[in-house]
Length: 325
Ligand code: BYC
Image (tube, rainbow, N blue to C red; front, side, top):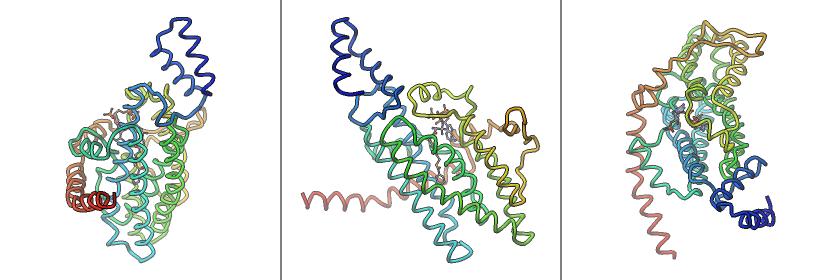
């Protein structure tokens, strides 16, 4: 919508004695409906701003906390090639976190505040990173399934209505494709390796399958944030749509390398053109989301320690900036 059109609307509203706040909200929604991006200096409802701060910061925290389960295997990678690839991937996750924190800061919140919310348990991060990584095959399962699920979600977020988030997603998706492929390559090699290697790959798939499909969040009927998120085009697809999309893509990939998805109810539904699948253990999901998963405490303590240990770096940067000014 051009400045001229907005001015015309304001003039006409004044004549018709329409409340200015209502008009601003109308113009905002019209822009969203017309697929225009909302930029940091544009007017936006408080609810839109706080919804974005919540979602983008949780996304950023997930990228940063998500470095821990994989970081665990950098020193134990089975070859120099595997080590280099894993290092590059984990560094990419740090970069994703930083783009997302920057996008979030454009909404008027500071990085310190975001870290405080994480450390005090007010901000969440993805449930998936509260599971342990027990074998090298878990690096394959994370890349294949976790990054695979992340891509499905993030491809749709490329079209999200907030400009800085959308542009961040475009760059992140390019890197996630490499991540998904490195994970699938590990799984393919192990599935075609010795009997023990194939068992390790199957075991990793067994442990990561259900937590991966939980990443998409509760069913739409139990998702309180979806209504506004869809109205404001922050989310472009619902939790269930994305989950189904991920399952439909992934089953054939498992078949191709001879691994079995651990769901006895998984069955192709000709009528829907999609897979039917078994019931998700929502008690497990909420338990993990509410801080009681196998690694929640460990992940958060590690983050706090790294943050405290880095204080001297932040102090040095500030002192240098002051001196330079
Ligand atoms: N884990 O109403 P709902 C990565 C919470 S990182 C924890 O459906 P919404 C990667 C939800 O926050 C992947 N909490 O919410 C990194 C809400 O609680 P609050 C991260 C969850 O926001 C390294 C409540 O449950 N990706 O890819 O509409 C290595 C009700 O849910 C989860 C993103 O963050 C969960 N799984 O939908 C490899 C993508 N699910 O906040 C890979 C961006 C739900 O009201 N985020 N909750 O207290 C999103 O797309 C959406 O926020 C979600 C949830 C789909 C996650």
